[in-house]
Image (cartoon, rainbow, N blue to C red; front, top):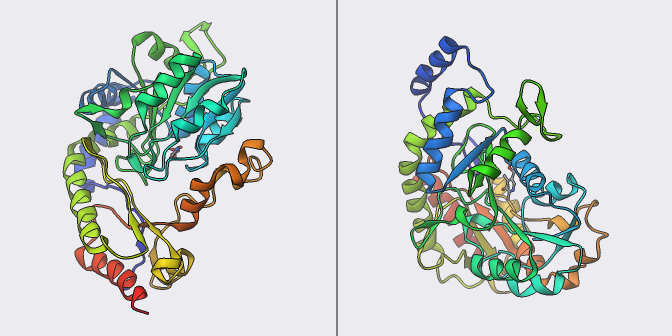
Amino acid sequence: MSNPIPVTSPLLPPLEEFLPYLEEIWRSKRLTNGGPFHEQLESALAEYLGVEHVCLFSNGTLALVTALQALRITGEVITTPYSFVATAHSLLWNNVKPVFVDIDPVTNNLDPKRVEEAITPATTAILPVHCYGIPCDVDAIQRIADTYGLKVIYDAAHAFGVRQNGVSVLNHGDLSILSFHATKVFNTFEGGAIICPDKKIKQRINYLKNFGFADEVTIMAPGINGKMNEVQAAFGMLQLRHIESALQIRKRIFDRYRSALTGIDGITLLHQPQGVDWNYAYCPILIDDARFGVSRDEMYDRYRAREILVRRYFYPLITEFPMYRNLASSDATKLPHAHRIASQVLCLPIFPDLSLEQQDTIIDILLSAREG
Ligand SMILES: *Cc1c(COP(=O)(O)O)cnc(C)c1O
């Protein structure tokens, strides 16, 4: 194989299809600040995803930081150690203390049974992640939030298009955040969004993402610049035309991995819950070296040696990084599931352009490792 195989590759429609969008931007000279493509994409996404309001951002991290601002979150927030580091960073950017609790070993999501014991008088919110796009136990989390008067903000960066019993998973909690980074299922090169249940909170978020401007002379809040520009938004409109077929191809690739790897001693595949229309965003496997015979890190090295760029999402845990590791809640003895899974996980390549031959190579490397 001449070219390295990445773990993911962006959904990139033919360039000719994007040129008319660019010509339109050049004609109108509207480059940003809520231009026509921005407005079109907000309504098109709300319709496609089945949500009330979409508020576009230049990236998912600024959407997260701004969502916490919009709800005036302070004090302590309960979150997961098993995520991309931006989840916890968004709390530090708001001067909020993260309180980490362990994950459920089947869903890889915040375990609601561990949340209650982490609540203190300073707790104001819960920040769960729909890890790999698998929905959190949203009912249990909402019950706890209601009992203790807490807000819920979902980091739904992995959950584009995911539905549970026909309803978008993005409709849960007070706000949800999406990322449209190049590595995600749906991308605008860089980009993100806050999903809002009503117009009032959307208005506040609109102020916050544009310096706090309500009109030329009125500043409502110390806002940031989080606006999505017209080139990004136009690309999003083009992506929407291709997303359904991309999701179908992802499903086919995932199902092929599953039939090849099911039943191998020491390999665990991601559990797909009943009633969930998943987006096949990631293909994580867990490698138990005692049973499989080869460790996760050895497999990582073998893939890398063949230029197959598998990733250990999420290793190290967020609680291992210097700005978090001294928190009491980062104590490894309280996070056994997160630590075990972080030491076993390997994400295999999954993206629409992955060829059958490439996938066979990836599968063979795993199968032949077991045979010695
Ligand atoms: C990608 C990602 C983010 C950050 O999104 P950006 O658009 O890259 O800023 C946040 N949380 C999770 C779980 C992610 O995977």
